[in-house]
Length: 499
Image (cartoon, rainbow, N blue to C red; front, side):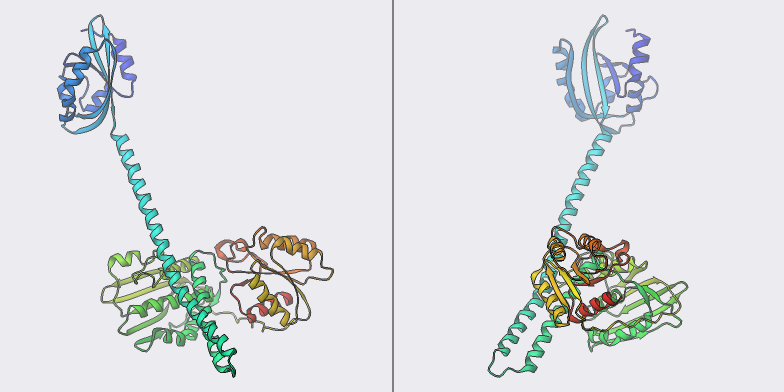
């Protein structure tokens, strides 16, 4: 049959899909896209039998398609999704739509064929991503369960100590002849358990980057020397702790509480890896404009797969409920936040070495100003804004007992109303950072707008609303971290009033 140049050269070539015209069992016409798709150069497809394009799958469909063509009076006979064969024998997925056209030359079958390879690959990729997302969600839920279990385990231990020793205090105080020494000893146990709870909340906040960071120049050798005794007590008698300070060490700029947290966490991990005893070496060394802190133990070491996941949040090899898996993740976070690096080297049976590298600061550490001692007030008026009634009462009791005049409010709105109705001076606003209805920052801005001489001291266990970048405090902001002792509160109040 003869075909017009317009049909073969224009319309067919403009199509994005392969177009094949069949005259009976042979290919009568094919556009360039068909040649590219099936791997036949030039016009070599024309004249070939349709069988050269078929796979076993598509060949099985051929009788039914031929019956549909024979019975059709014209128009589309539908589409099928199947496979096709290239000239080199490789197979690929296609969608083929066939239309019957009656022409003066006879009945023609025109097939429009689309390569589905990219579409199927995309669908497979989406399915893979969905599966990964599902796996990640499951992993997050498992991690949250691990975290909740570890926290619940630790806090239940602390609460058990607090509740029982508090009852011991009550029982002894109500005895006919109270033993004051026994009461004091039991109260000390309550305080120790509370301190452990404080340490755990600080660890959680540090991991979440919600803890206040107060970086300052630190003499690393001197600080480790100060902590040596407590670290020796931490590892126990069957572990030998050796400290080798490097000479000529410049200072590092770091939060002192974070440094202690890093050391305690790493030393605890080393101790747990040496159940039968061993040696733990802490050494420091200057590396040009950096300072290296290295902690090496002779413990059981870690396998490669454990080493790969050691810094992952919530990952732990300890029995379920005995650890939150936040130790090394928190160490990584605070070191990274300080501009440093931390790496692990370990092999089963050969122990573990943790290397921390921090930027060097000044050659010598400036002399610290002596912190003001907790002193009594001189009748100054303090407005305490705190939504937790028990803590509000505690703060009021401490301040009143120290000679301050105290007025209280349970939220920002009430604090403004109390201040508006107070005729005298308000020397200090002591405000929680996060309160319902109005944050402490907004309260402070509105109160100092009306009373410019009022100073502000925030208190919070979650200080994010008043933090600047890198977890440091905004300029001019003073914060008392919860939980605090009476001395902590009185020293912070006195410092803010006198400053």
